[in-house]
Length: 397
Image (cartoon, rainbow, N blue to C red; front, top):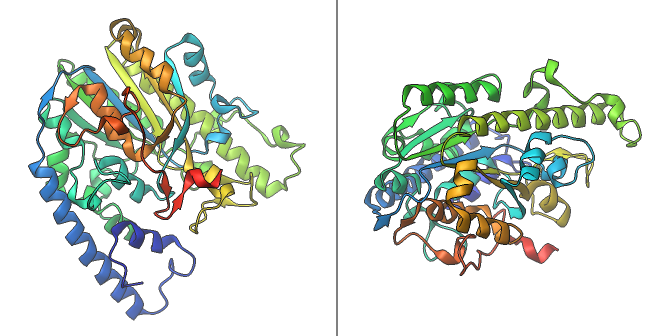
């Protein structure tokens, strides 16, 4: 285990069977030293690349850009993607109105949040030369292009940076205050019990800073993470056990599925509330989940399997919901971009290329922009969709 020198593979070892529990104090000490040593090296490389990154030009094509990152979201439990229960009525209504564009084939590189964040934030993606740690994190390029960059997180607030072993392994780059100050103009300091509380934090910040001309907001939800019974106010629950009466599942499994679907329905309310915050602006909102989750569908499993992906686990854990919503004003002023959204939303997409899409929306041009990996570009090719660091997703289907 300690011969592994790849940050993301080392993070995955924490979750794999047999490694989540260290056998002796010596094992734990050795692993802690290895993770701290590797994190320090990787962090320094990321900081070097990020602090030196520059922008060639920026048109501020989209004055207000919002990236919403969902959590543990199985797209096959979204009625937006054909699920039998109405878990996403607000999103479906906006799609019907013609201003929400659903991406049919988005895949994430990892089923571990911390690894996903490394790939989402980095301008590196599979097939690129060199190591990911030698590429800058994209929020700094938005700052240098003149955007006010804000990070609102219900999982990684400033008040909770150093809690838990995985924070020190996979979330290390968000735990470094110097790098955090380089990436963001503002960062939320506290978590909320439910995601609607985080939405209120975003609204409060907007009320206090109404005149900023160019903004880029990253909103990181807790979504359907782990114990779904704690992810929504139960008085807002829509589904009961009778909705699963003919599924052939036992009572325990039905309860877990019910809570997951209720949390998904609540998430629909949350993201609709986020969209309402920007409704009067010339704004565009990108929603993507970090990874999926097993919910007793193809396999009798709840959660995630940290093993080499199979066709079944790839479908439930690595396929993710993704959509882009435009405000009415944005639709009127950006008809060519909207046309590309409509034309390209069925293309295969790898979420590690999200920075390229965001650069397009901002009109940022820099050495780190690659139009072949920008799904809105006429030259789009996409990246190899390597999941869990070892399996070609497309070879499974």
